[in-house]
Amino acid sequence: MPCFQLLDAETAHVLGVKMLSFGIVPFKTYQDPPSLTTSVWGRTFSNPIGVAAGFDKHAEAMEGLRKIGFGFIEVGSVTPLPQLGNPKPRVFRLTEDEAVINRYGFNSVGHPVVAERMKKFRQKTEKSIVGINLGKNKTSTSAVDDYVLGVECLGDFADYLVVNVSSPNTPGLRELQGKKQLQELIINVLKARDSLLRKPPVLIKIAPDLTSKDKKDIADVVLDPKSRVDGLIISNTTISRPSSLKSQLKSETGGLSGKPVTDLSTDTIREMYKLTNGSLPIIGVGGVRSGRDAYDKIKAGASLVQLYTAMAFMGPPLITTIKKDLHKLIREDGLKNITEAVGNDHR
Image 1 (tube, rainbow, N blue to C red):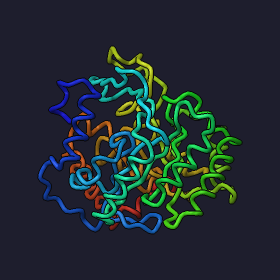
Image 2: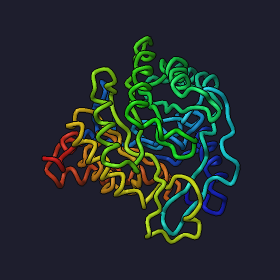
Image 3: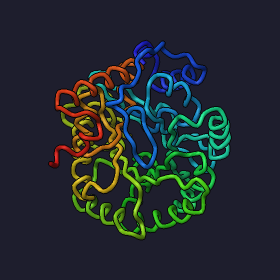
Image 4: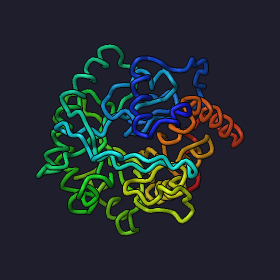
């Protein structure tokens, strides 16, 4: 948030989450118009703008995030056992580039703590749509077992589950995007999901740094009846460093998010929408700073959109600004509802 720019990036992040968890939020009068209402996976979203995983890692601030106007919330990533993540400093604000580099490394309080927080939250409200992003422990000997444990422990509290195989900050994780490894993982995750009472949709979160062959292989896997998932999240942070970066911190190791990722993410959405024939809902994330950015992702094929980094720079009022701009943009295109814009670039 803007007033936190005097603090280091991680301290500002932690403080922002704590304030939201205590209900210290800006007063909001904006009501979502019917034009922004959308339905995905049988769930009705009052607006298509959500907060991406990585902000509320430990499921502490869900009510506060709902109050500032998000249409849905994604918590995590959550690992089976608590872990501290990578050594500090591990988050770097690239102010000149409106970007962040992080190498958190799945710092997590673990499944039991998040399960208890989700249970209490669900007892208070069933209205909020909350997805849970699952990760693996750094020292785990079986990624499949870690993700299955996540489904079993947290699945009954989730409106959707995310299998995060694309963070660049856990050794070997992105290898799970390989065709054989991904299919084995998904088959086991779906089997665990199908044993649950709630049976939430399962999504795969992929990287923006994939080759054309990687993307084709992922599309083949997620469309295969044996391993067909319910959606994709596109995309995670990038390990690339565009030549346009100006900050002296640009060479820090980790995943880059924010403005420099905008086009890379949108292009990946567009390509995966085409490869999957528009048959899987996509959550678009990466460099969303305006209504136009969100609308571009929706037209490329995203049914829903998430943001995180831009809120760190521009604060909670950005959410209302984006929603107002989206409403205006769909009206300018002669549309009545945001769902009519999904995938319009392909028509």
